Image (tube, rainbow, N blue to C red; front, side):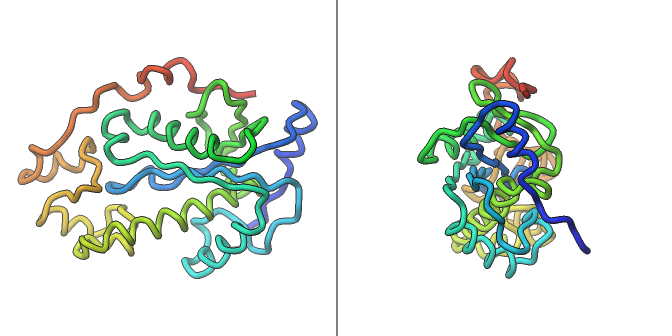
Length: 233
């Protein structure tokens, strides 16, 4: 299916309206998985012409995505990855875990961004970051699309490595998402050390329900997060 290539329109707008010079595109992967971390990539691209075929990672084949990630890692001005572990997701909830992973990625960049383009409708970063949210930014914004591809390829590789000792779960194929093979292995063998134990899927597994964790804080009410969501400019 044809798609429009991403542009620098949002980056140019931010430069013109805010004076921002260093702008990072941010995207996440793993939010809906049952196992593994949530991973965030922050990418700075400048205004150069992007590699041919760049778009949202979900629109690319595995082969093309892997090839493009290798090109992007050499092409971008800078990129960094941040992760929040299954334990952190269980303890904090997904919103706070996303923020934790994103802050880790942003703070790992060699230069602190003046502004951040965040894929989606909701700002899970909040102050002090200056955030512009863009729905489908991973398709329309060059920096966010680059972050999308790099994050996806890195997390898929990580899940394949984590799954080496848990072959029945086929993490190399499903990246921790609830495929039929993953569901069957979970029902038979129970969760691995990489599963998120506060999630509702355990309610449907009587043999393993006793392992479910109750998170320490209600979603959106974690200290340092409450009152910061929805910031935009």
